[in-house]
Amino acid sequence: RATGANGAQAFRFGVLPQAMPLMATYSLLLFEHNVRSATILGLVGAGGVGFILQKYLSLFQYRELMGTLIFIIVMVTVIDRVSDALRKRLI
Image (cartoon, rainbow, N blue to C red; front, side, top):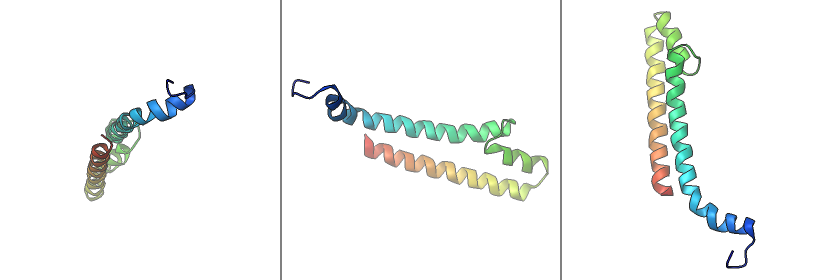
């Protein structure tokens, strides 16, 4: 405000650029957590990604179960790596 900017301009050009890296980092962490939680919740019967795993396990379709499990592990790993790379660029 000392530079003559109004409240909205001070927020947009002063506060927001400083807060964006932390907000983006927190959003990425929440996204990772939500992917993992959806898998685990599905395993205990609440739907989500893990529901498919539970279905294949209960039907003794182990080939499909392993394929789905490998896919989930690969996707979580990719999300984790991309998130780490983005966080390092932001901070």
